[in-house]
Amino acid sequence: MKTNALNRRDFIAKSSIGLVGTGVGLMNSGFIGEKHHSLNIAEQNKIKEYRVLGRTGFRVSDIGCGTMGISNENVLRQIIASGVNFLDTAEAYANGNNELMVGRAIKDIPRKNVFINTKIYVGPNDTVESLKLRVQKCLERLQTNYIDGIMIWSASSVETIRNEIFHEAFKQLKSEGRVKYCGVTCHGTAWIEEPRENMEQIIGAAAEDGRFDMVMFVYNYIQQEMGEHILAVCAKKNIGTTLMKTDPFGGAYLFIIDRVKNLQKENQPLSDDIKKIYDKIMENQLKAEAYLQQNNLSDVNIRREAAIGFALNNPSAHSALITFKTFEDIDNYIRLSGVRLTAKTLSLIEVLKETYGHLYCRHACGLCESSCPSQVQVNRIMRYNHYFMAQGREKYAIQKYHEISGLKAENCLDCEGYCEKSCPFGVPVHLLLAVAHQNMSLGEA
Ligand code: SF4
Ligand code: SF4
Image (cartoon, rainbow, N blue to C red; front, side):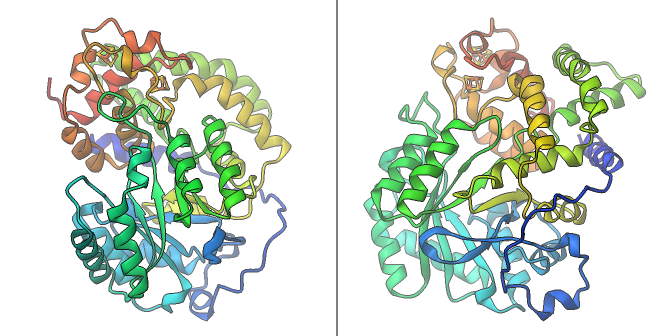
């Protein structure tokens, strides 16, 4: 697994070439201070656009930072120095160590220069006191007197966002000056055990509720419709919007191609599932390849530009969160600040949707889950597999996969694939579940 992850990164690195400038009009933020200039950061690696995060009034960088994948705090320091000022963490990331790292990275900069967002899980046994105590622990780990944004993590029902315990705790924390704004994130629900409500219903209810200042949800060029509805309702209510999974594939399909090539090079056997999904990818890729090459659209950088350009093209979207891991990611993504869709990237999106759209299990979906006789949480498993393959967060994905209650994808191997037959998007999810199981089960049955 480790070898593959390294090879994938090498692959991406080798595929990278300089990005052609997009000539986008820039907004003047007035944020970047002398400290950032003193680091002598190349112009292409500075944030060029800031947007007002709804009713919070804070001017956030259009490229925000999901900190969960960062293990080297110098990477985070450089991200901040580049002008990124929305930093997203959570109490549970790396068992609190992620907040500790964020705390160390922001210690030496003026506190008001960054918007710190953290997330807490709100469970049925929580009390006002227990939530306040946990937020206090977040404050201590972050080494700060106040947290800008505190979000309910992964709300799994409309009921969760109306949790009066959370709202009372937030009210008290706010009056004590320990937190400023409240929000909510959503990854959809596991229909087997949770209400059959989708991301749009849950985030929409939060927007209508009136007590939330900001939200975080999935929006990308394949999963467009739900996100657009959410953005419209948030714009009406002046709610800040932060976006997850803006690049629907990340390195996912590259990862599979890379893995197969390495296994072949080493004369290692390929499992049937990997081989089948690889053949599917290659079949589709071959169809698109001539057009992509002819139009200079086959490079991974232009694909990133298209994904971020799509998300930022919507003026109601305030910050597209990137899961940064390395210095290389800084090079790859900060330069996309201020980017918009162009005729070229729009045509690429059309091809990508056509070529790979059916390989993408929509986040926060779950429409097929009721057809599974084993009650497998298809969408949750595919989300963890996205962490594994597209975001390179292998350890975290494996941990989350093991935490899933009930049956996991080991049941899929000998199944007829009822879920796949009921997927309206034609996702070959039967095979993808088998690959997900291989990825995250560490060779277990
Ligand atoms: S396989 Fe299809 S129906 Fe099932 S969760 Fe994914 S996108 Fe939704
Ligand atoms: S492949 Fe079979 S067991 Fe696996 S999720 Fe689909 S229906 Fe359920």
